[in-house]
Figure (tube, rainbow, N blue to C red):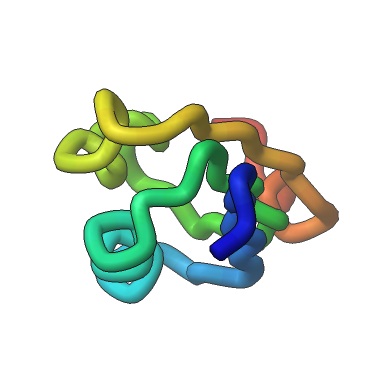
Length: 69
């Protein structure tokens, strides 16, 4: 089993259920989220159940800037 585990996940399009499940199952040291979030609320609202379990980093991409909001 590796000492450091990092979970990379991309294109959630507003559905973070699989990412949350993976964090709960694999307990990674960090999660890197790769764009196309399609958020209608702040990101931490979607990740509230795992925010204290792992470090979370995100990289926004083109569709994350489709609107001024």
